Length: 223
Ligand SMILES: C[S@@+](CC[C@H](N)C(=O)[O-])C[C@H]1O[C@@H](n2cnc3c(N)ncnc32)[C@H](O)[C@@H]1O
Image (cartoon, rainbow, N blue to C red; front, side, top):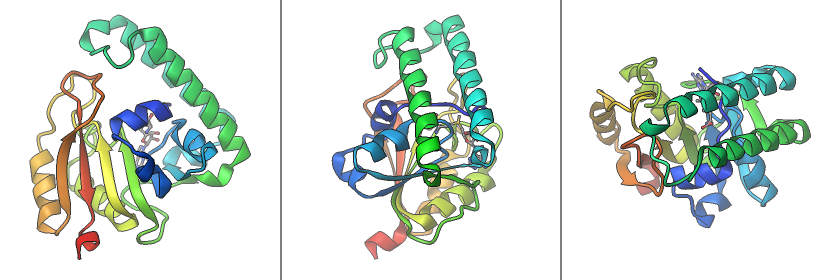
């Protein structure tokens, strides 16, 4: 799986983030080489990033993320028509955001290494309720051709253990953007456990049909 570097601006749109959302303790899981934590924290935020890739040396991680950005650009250039360009405008703007996010991530990783915690779902190295909000960009559901129903349920329950609210984007499989076959059964299971799960529209679409996020409020917030 590639270690990609989406930007703060993309995250804002994926997760319909408000200034109130950003005022709390936020977990970016799995953050990869995203610039979200770097930019949010420079603006006074309290974001922690977690990813299994953070057990690597910064140089190796930077090289992997740079390679991912180059490969991503090549794929997009070859399959431009498969995507909706209204949010980015151009491939150049898309590329510019990825490069800036990667630079912000690498600089912040050196300055604030404690922000970047090695860890993997479904077993995160954080206390119960450590965060107000957990964001998951391009891992859950995106990789449902790799991770199965049981893994998704365990991963979401773990995220709901460490955060009071969890948001996931996108809700389609990577590549052709197929629907996730076990999505409704995962949501039913979360609701059975008392969590409040909702699928809501967001102001972003790139993969066709991927303009919704999942938001889940943990059962204890309504208790
Ligand atoms: C496609 S990248 C997304 C990175 C970033 N969120 C973004 O949107 O650019 C997926 C990330 O998931 C991480 N990952 C892979 N397996 C994982 C697991 N079991 N638990 C948590 N993260 C995982 C990878 O290391 C990779 O950085």
